[in-house]
Length: 261
Image 1 (tube, helix red, strand yellow):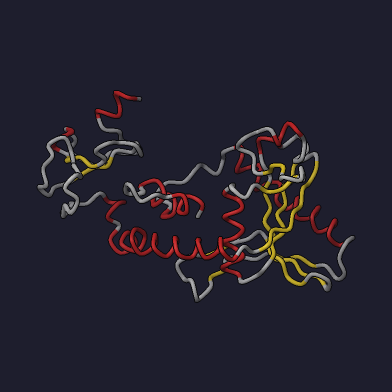
Image 2 (cartoon, one colour):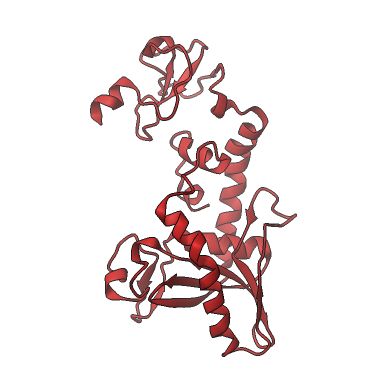
């Protein structure tokens, strides 16, 4: 969802569509993914033990996939749902960052990493960065589940950080509007045709006089392939113009972008 919010609409969002449709996916054996899977249960148990000391009749359970009939084009799968007599119902989102797995999640070493999800606010209190993709993920979950609060847990072998993230309605409205527009313009056509996946014959109607396709600059229909460089100046190429006869396996870069790499 974070990438959808950041999408500017200048070019066809190849990588976003590819990721959402899961045409390609990272290997489950990647160290970061394995670390997360292997330690999520431990993190949940630590969180539950801590919360039971602070809340009355505290319970937590697995969530599963949540679909809201009001917004059927988006869904959420939080890591759990908790409840207690004093605070009511909350969502639970757990992260076990591999890059800081052996140090405290609130250590200076962790917080100085620019890609890390936690930061220090104006009051110097550690918090989930409101610009991070995890914040967008949590707001989307709160929107879909129609719940007001989510406990965000950042767990390492050296400690645990917990922050209650509250629903930001203006941010949720932004998610709702942008996701619906993106779904209707890009995902629904792809679900119906698998056009992007199959790289089928493309009959393009040129409505933008400044838009150029292929080296030949022709509007003629034909089998085309997209360059996987997001910043490619041309993006789409006829098979015959780049001397290929079948759909490339894996990533493909046009001759111009291969020279730049």
